[in-house]
Amino acid sequence: MSTTVAQGETLHLCLMLAGVADHTATDVEWYTSLLRFLFLDLLIRFLLVLLVLVRKAGNPQTALTWVILLLGLPVAGLVLYLLFGEARFGYFRRKRHAEAIQRVDRPGVRADTNPDVRVELPLMESQIASLAQKVSGAAPVRGNRIELFGDSAEFVDRLIGDIQDATRSVHLLFYIYLDDEAGSRVARALGEAQARGVTCRLLVDAVGSKAFLKSRLVEELRRSGVAVRSCLPVNPVRMLFSRLDLRNHRKIAVIDGQVGFTGSNNLAEAAFAVKARFAPWVDCTVRIDGPATKELQVLFLEDWHFESGELAEEELLAQPEMREDGLPVQIIATGPNFYNEATTQIVQSCIQVVQHELILTTPYFVPDESTIRNLCVAAQRGVQTRLVVPKRNDSRMVGLASRSNYEKLLESGVEIFEFTKGLLHAKTITIDRRVGVVMSANLDRRSFELNFECGAIVYQSEFAETLRRLQQSYIRDSDQVDPEAWSRRGRGHQLGETLAGFIGPLL
Image (cartoon, rainbow, N blue to C red; front, top):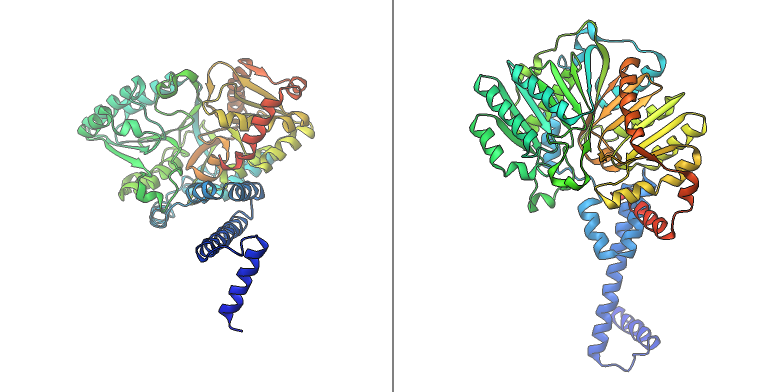
C-alpha cells in the first residue's frame, strides 16, 4: 500500500469518527485544511512555550505567566511576546553601546584611579559596597560633600545656580524634560552658559521627553548652541529589532566634572503638567561635590557617545577634586546591555545585611519574588521593616499589582504606609540609620531588568539620618495599612489585585 493511500484511509477514518464520511470532496479538503491549521497552531504554541521555558529558565514566575498567556490567548499572546517578551536591545544598538562602554570605561578614568580617594568601610557597609562594585562597576570613594533635596523647587534652584557658575561644561541627562516653568528656567541657564563659552550637552529619553523634543523650547536651545540629543529613538522599523519600552530612565547632571546630581527628579515642576491630577510629585535627589561625580560623568559620556558618536576626551580624563571633610559615596548603574540585574541584587543585599531598621520608599512596587521573600524574612527576624508607597498611583494596574503583595508582607510583619499628599516618586532606602540610598530606579521589574538606571549609596550615619527624617515625613503624611482591615477587604478588590499580580511579572 502506498503512503498516499494510507494517508487517505487515515483521513477517511478520522472523518468517519467525526460523522462526516459522506461529505463531498470539497468538505474533505476543508476538513484537511482545518486539521493542518490546528496542527500548525499547536506546533507554534509548543515552540513558543519551549522558547519561554528556555529563555526564562532563571525566572520561573515570569515564565509561568507567559506560558499561560500564550496558551490562553495564542494570537494576542504571540504579538505581546514578540513586542515585550524579550529584552531585545537590537543587534546594532547592542554592538554600538558595547563599543561606547569600551571607549569610555577604560583604565585611568574611574573615580578610584586616585588612591587617596579609596576608602575602607565597616563590615556591613563593605558587604553592600563589595556587591555593588561587582555588579555595577564603581567603587566607593571618599571626599564627597553631599546635599539632599526633598523639594523639587529647591533642586531646580540649586541646579540652575550650579549651571550659572559653570566655567567648562554642563551635562544633563533626564528621562523626562517638560516645557514648563522649571524646564524653561533650566533652558535659559543653559543658553546663557553656552553664550559665555561653556559647552552644554542635553540628553533626554525619546519617549519620556517626546513632547519636549517637539517643543519650541528645544528649538531655542539648539539655536543658542546647546547640543540636544534623544536617547533610544523609536520608530516602526526599530520595533522589529528591539523593544520600544527599553528606556533611559536615568537622572544625571554633571557641572564642570566636579558637581553631580542624581535621584528621582525629572526636569519638571512638582505640579507635573502631564499628570497633574496626581500632583504634587514628591521627589528626592542628592547633590555630590567630589570624586564620586566622576562616575556620573562616565555614565553620561557613555550614553552621549552611544547616541551621538562623539566622545569628549577632555571631560573623560579630568578628575574631580576631593573634599577633605567629604563622605564615602558609591555610584550604582544598570542597563539592558550590561549590569542588568544590578539594581535587584543591590536592593536585596541591603535587605539581607540590615540588623535593626529598614525603610524603603518607591512609587511603583512590583518586584521579583526573591525581593518580596527577603523583605518578609527581614521582618520575621525582627528587623523593623517599613515600605512607603503612594495611596493613589498614576498607573491603576501597577497600583493593583503593588497591593497584590500586601497580604504576605503584612503577615510577615512588614509595615506598609500609603502616602496621601500627592504621588510619592522618591526612590530611597535607609539601612540601620547608617547607609542611605537614593536612586532613579523603582522597586519594579522594569527598573530591575529593562531600564537604564543610576543612583548613589552614601556610607555615613549622619546622611542616613537626614534621609531617614525625610522618609519619616513621608510616613507622617501616610495612612498605615492595617493588617486586620486589609484581610477583610472586598472580594472584588481581591480579584482585581490577584489578576494584576498575576501579570505583574510582565509590567
